[in-house]
Amino acid sequence: MKFYVGVTDNKWFRFLAERKPDEVNFWRPKNQNDFKAIGKGDLFLFKRAAPSRQSTAGTGFISNCGS
Image (cartoon, rainbow, N blue to C red; front, side, top):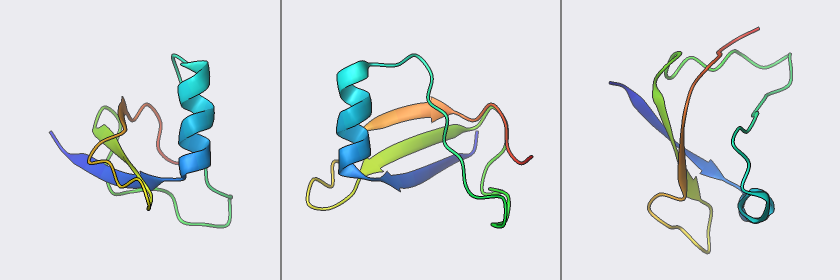
């Protein structure tokens, strides 16, 4: 299984942690390249940005990549 570690903004992390959602949607503006580091079904690990720098703050599986 492939995985990717992405750094997430601390304010965004706290916002989501307070709400405890079942699903989160991350997106990038259309003019940027599609995310190709991992594909559908692969694991995405979230690391908090400085100053927290926790090793892993959350996990998720990619359900859709690209348009």
